[in-house]
Length: 196
Image (cartoon, rainbow, N blue to C red; front, side):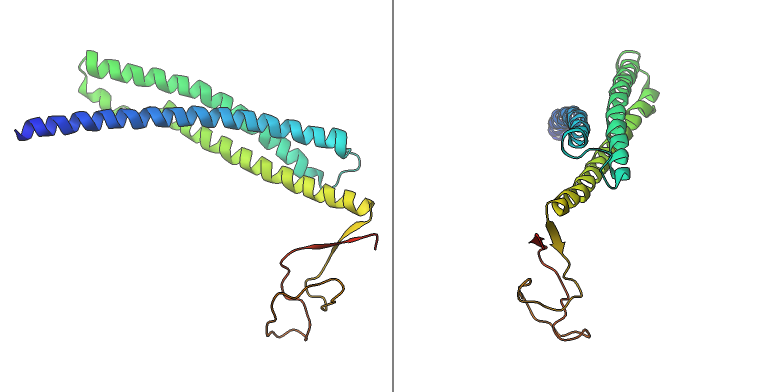
């Protein structure tokens, strides 16, 4: 009776494990598609920004832009290479399964699938490159939009460490500090001046 119960639990475990492995494989496929699509889109948008909105000759902090381009391209290449390694990993796993189930080689279960490990690492690096590229692109756009705003007479109000001025600032809280009375200690939301 107990062995039948054990057998049933092992079968349930195997079915559940297969479902989880299938779900993980689908997640990796979706991740690869997302990284590939978003990296291409981010690269295209940043190129369009420089081409149509803010010309490269007038841009500031170009290292943000060039670094983001490099990282977007790196994430695309890493994703493509991970496709190749996933094929190798699948072939290797099929060989291991054939050796174990058909050829009855018990030692086959102890074989490592290095292509699978490389695929996982490539996916991680692709995500890191994509996220870094997106952050750098946002920084580049932010810096250049501030420059465009200044060109049209919109300037950011610097308030940290300044004396409180009711014409420009709002008080949210009052705190005791070592600073002079009325000194702004924290900025909750940035302010801007038009044609100052």
